[in-house]
Amino acid sequence: MNLQRDTTIAAPATGIGGAIGIIRVSGPGTFKMVDSLFFPAGDREILSASGYTVHFGSIRKGDEFIDEVLLTLFRAPASYTGEDSAEISHHASPYIQHRIMELLIDLGVKPAMPGEFTRRAFMNGRMDLSQAEAVADLIAADSAASHRLAATQLRGGFSEGIEKLRKELITFASLIELELDFSEEDVQFADRFAMTETVIKIKKMVDRLISSFRLGNAIRKGIPVVIAGRPNVGKSSLLNILLEEERAIVSDIPGTTRDTVEEVLHVEGLLFRFIDTAGLRQGGDEIEELGMERTLNKLKAAEIVLAVTEATDSAGEISDFAASVSEMTGNTEARIILIINKSDLITRNIASSLKKELEGLCPFPVLFVSAKYSDGFDALKKQLTASVETGRLDNPQYIVTNARHYDALRNVSESLQRVLDGFRDGIPTVLIATDVRQAIYYLGLITGKILPEDILGEIFARFCIGK
Image (cartoon, rainbow, N blue to C red; front, top):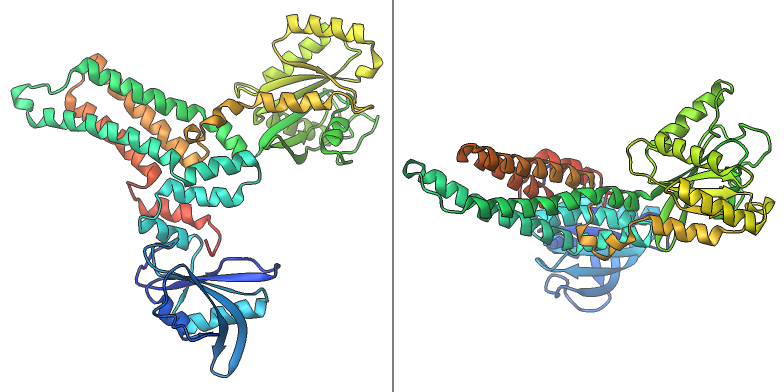
């Protein structure tokens, strides 16, 4: 998407369906073009009006009355885009919206491309690139936790941390470059030990950010929770009780669930995506085998696994099952919660003895529930939230939610590791300088200090029109 700053753009900023619609206009010709269509109810002139003012009037074309509207004005640079801007609030009729856009286009306004308003805000210095991406995340946020992460990034908390690391590396690079300028004199301007300590410190912070991506991405998209177990242990009943609705079919016939069933649930400000899966067993027909394959794929992508067994199973059987589920998840660091269903079939003393025995056999939290009597589910919800590293949410600026940022940080870490290896192995300074420049480059990609056109186009193409 080519950005033409000398053009004025417009687009609906709201969808059809409510009582009010808004058309957003931005660019150097905003006030002149709007003034030719807007007729204020009073005597106030639009062209000389101050920014952050709202005006009541009507949109007309000659004798054609379109609608009564509220016109909000924003003077550059104190606007979302950093340009002269206006928002036309009209009655949310598809015809009215289309007709106002048509009149603006007749005046020379260009229809905005997806994300073009936010891209102009970025190009005009109103926000950096990571903040611009946070706008889309904020709009898409569907839980308190994902909203908090996006809001922190939008306010610049994440950017400040990245920029601080980048400036430290630039200072470090300047010393390296200075040595290259005096290479013939064989001069060192900084102690190699101190330099190594600096790189180690920066790399530790970068690696900490990298390790946060699993949590950040899960919170942003919804934390995937796979319900796994043998047929007829009550997996579907478990899902139905958590959701408080009959979402999954419950039957005594083995193999009833042949495909995954997915639903979402908010618990303590976190969005969990529950996935009921086909029963884990060998054999079955071709469709059931396909369901098993999908179950295994979901297990490998899970953040949390509810491994469901029955209270009438022995401690050894339950422990072996939990171990097999853990093996199925691979090396994904999925957190496993062992759910002992049908606790109503055993006494409290037997349950206490079984739990104590299981705690000595397997490292996973053990919870007893009864899907039949809806017992134990409050404790399950508490365990779900405890399984998420909610402590890291106390410092949301240190949580990575964006895959592009994650890839860039991995490249930074690899570059810094080469710097450390270079110091250790006595590699020439010119090669070390190259790796330092690479680290600075990839940090710059995150905030937009480096501006490859193809990356910008890809980012803003994912925005909705009008934003």
